Structure formats: structure tokens, C-alpha cells
Image (tube, rainbow, N blue to C red; front, top):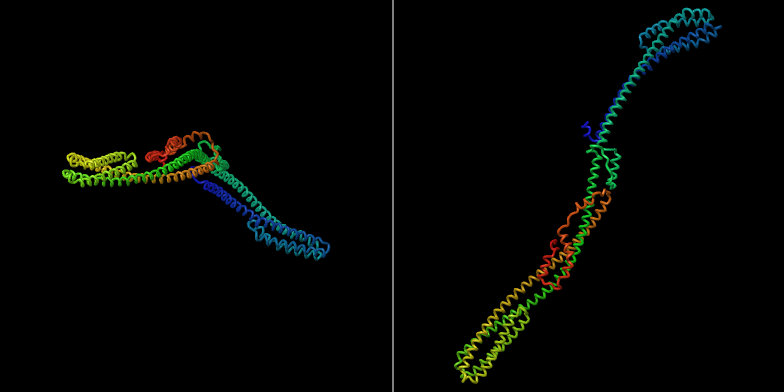
Length: 576
């Protein structure tokens, strides 16, 4: 039985119908066998006994016809009437001979063969007597004919009729026996076929019950119930209840119920997930919108910063050029101051001959005035450049002021020297002292000019470094501008992707809406299945809520360093 359960339904049906077919074939074969026996009895009765009875009766009838016509001939009043019986006697004799010829082929029993042999012995004698009777009747001797017919001819005829009757009785008895045998065979066949039919019906019913029970157990119910359940599931109705028998864990209905439950769980999960995805898509879309707006504002700020950096780069480059020019002028002033120191040295050396060299002294005074004038001009230029440099040129302006004061003092000293030229004779000692003071002053000027030259060199180097740094900052700002534009493009792509995802989620929700499920417990399931927001989305939403305040607090022209710091610290840069 267990092996039968493991067979396929088609195999079980084929096996069951095969058993039924084998039973039908066996029943048919047995019925054919019995019909063959019955047919043998019927054939024996039809081909032997009944023809024998018919032929023997025809022989008996022929003899009686001959006898009757003999009486007619013997009892006729005239020979003419006797002659009329002649054809009738011949007709009866012909019937007898024809029946005798048929009967010769049908003899089977010894008793009838013995009787027939007696008939064949007596028949010629009877026919001779018959000829004599007919001859006497035709000759008008009816009394002799009647005497012969009722005498010796009647004795032989009675013996023949007795043998014919024996033959008839033997064949009738044989036909009766054959009929009874046929009846017995028929009754036996009816009984056996009926028993076989009942046995085949019982076996077929048992096989059908076993197969039907196995198929019903595999189906778990009626096929129409499984078809109805499958139709409900196909129509999207997942609320239908599945009725199962006790301890049913392997039937088709159980599998359909499990499929329905699993499909219900999947559909509920898809619905919950689609709702969660829809909410997340909305949050992402809102975050992308805020991020796009902030990115556009950031791009505008970077453009302003880049423009300001370009202006600052031009200003620093110009400051560097001016610093180089001031360094050149300071070098020239240093050389001039050195030459003035040399001249003062020569003046000190020749001071003792100042009286004799008044003209030379005048020239020297002129040179000193020229130097003072040039120094004053240089100081003015340095002051102008310092004013242009602003806060960074404040120290240089102080130095320029000192240089200018020194130049003015040099001019004043030159004028005093010119005034003292006239008194050079009387005031040689005073002139020498003044010359010595002028030498000291020139030395101080030389040292001051050297310090100014060093300071201007440092200013030039710092300006060059500032120019290089600002160019690097400008390059970085340009790169940040490009990155911001790329981020804006990415934000647009993300917004498009979010919109596409929202459309796909809507299509998914419409597709799942075909299924009708029991919503009991769906809320808790939704809470359990709803995914948590990603950190990026949460940060983006948080930054979107706090962004208006930061926008209001941002200055109109934010410095480059502060803008870079805000860009580096912005939450949306965590995503890109």
C-alpha cells in the first residue's frame, strides 16, 4: 500500500484500469470458452440430432404416405382410380428415399445404426410387395391387393415403421440429452460468469477505492475545491480559507494553502516595503531638493569667492611688483648713501684745507643737497607705496618718514654748511665738527637705507609668496566650483532617480493591489519591516530643517577660508 502511494497519479490510474482490463479480458476469455462449449452443444444439436430427427420423421412420413396411397389404390373401385394413386405412391417413395439419403450421413449411435440396418434389409421386401399391391390394384384385383397389403406387406411395413420409430426415438433422446447438456452448460456458464462478474466488480471496486482514496489523500479534497482555491488565488483573493483534514501535511490542498499563506506573507511584505520605500523616496526627494538648493547657493558663493580671489590676486601681484620696485629704489638709495659716506669721508680728510677749497666745498654742498633732494623724493615715493600697501606697509611708512626727516635734516645741514662756507676760515674747527657730524649722519643714513633695503626685500619675498598662495587658493576655489557643479549635476541625477524609484514603487503598489489579503496585524508588521533611515538621509533632513537659520546668518561676502570651512563641514558632503 505504501508503494502504491509513492506512485504517480497517472501510474495509479493506469494500474487500476489495467487491473480492470485484465479482469474484463479474463471474464471475456472465460465467457468465450463457455460460449464455445455451448456452441458445440448447439452445433451438435443443429447439425446432428435435429437433422436426424427431421430425416427420420420424413422417412416415417414417407412410409405413411406410401401406405395411405396403397390403401387408396387397393380400395379403389376401378383400375383407373387405382392408377391415380400411382403418382402419389411414387411421390411418397421419393420423399422417403430423399430423407433416407440425408439420414445416412447423420448416423452416430449404434442403436440407430442397427435399426437402420434392419430397415435396409426389410425395405426391398416391402417395395416388392408394394409393387405387387399396385399391380393387383391396377389389374382390378382390389381384394387381392387389400389382402396382400394387410397381410405380409403390413407385417414388413410395421417392422420398418418400428425401426423408424426406434431411430426417431434415439435421435429425439439424443437431442434431448444434447439440449439438457446445453442447458447445464448454460447454467454453469451463467453461474461462473456471474461469479466472475461479481468477483471482478469487487476487485475493480476495491482497486478503484484504493486509487480514489490515494488520489483523494494526495489532493486533500475534491478537485473542484482545489480548482476553486487556485482560481481565487489567481484572481488575487488571498482571504479564502483552506479546509484541510486532520493530520494532512502532504496533500495538494495543503500545498496550495501553504502557497497561499506564503504568498499572503510576501504580498504583505511587498505592500509594507513599498509603503516604506515610498516614504523614503519622498524623504530622499525632499532632501535632494534642499540639497540642490543649497548646492546652487554654494555654487553662487563660490563664484563670488572666485571673483574676489581674482581681484585679490591682481592686487597682491601689483603689490609684489611695487615691492620689487621699492627694493630697487632702496638699493639705489643705499648705493647713493654709500657714495655720500665716501664723499663725507673725503670731506673729513680735506676739512683742514677747507679754506683753500671753498669752491670744492660748494660743489660738495650741492652734491649733498642733490642727495637730500633725491632722498626726499624717494621717501615720498616710499610713503606713497606704504599708503597703498595699507596695514602691511605701515612699518615701511614709518621708515620712509624717518628717511624723509633725515633728508630734510641733510638739506638743513647743507644749507648751514653753505652759510658757514663764508665763515670757513674763522670756523674751521666748527666746520670740522659739523663735517664729522655729517659723516656720522651719513653713516646712519647708510645703515637706515640698508635696513630699508632688507625690509623691502622681505616685503617683496612675502608678496611673492602671498601671490603664489593666493593663486593656489584661486585654483582650489576653481576646483571647488567644478566639484560643486558636479555635485549639482549628481543631485539632479539623484532627484531623477528618486522620481523614477517613486514611479516604480507606485507601479509595484498597483501590481500588488490586485491581491486582497487579511490586513489583521499589518500595522505591527509594517512597523517591524519599515527600514530605518540611512544616516545620509537623516543628516540631509536635519540639515534641511536647520538650513534657513544658517542662510540668514551667512554674511553677504564670506571670506574664502570661512567658506571653505563651511563647505567642508556641510552635512551633504557626506554623500558626495
